[in-house]
Length: 114
Image (cartoon, rainbow, N blue to C red; front, side, top):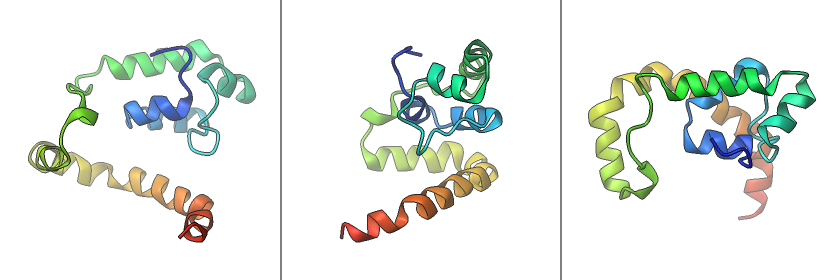
């Protein structure tokens, strides 16, 4: 993890890290432009503690194994369906919760740009 990355960039690289930020009450959506240190300081949290939790997640058995951003969309879709379909169904609730929040907070702005 690069110390210059924002919390939004950290989650964009590995969506699983959103759960760590949520646990600590760190906003990676609207507050996603802040660094990890800035985000932790605003919450009175030790940045090293959060960094350790993020590192532990990276070392887990479910760490991303490929550069998904470089794959074609059709290959990525097939990969997700064939390898992760069941785990995605289990994790759909947290993802849906984040999507609903983004739609609630940013939905009006997006609809006005059409």
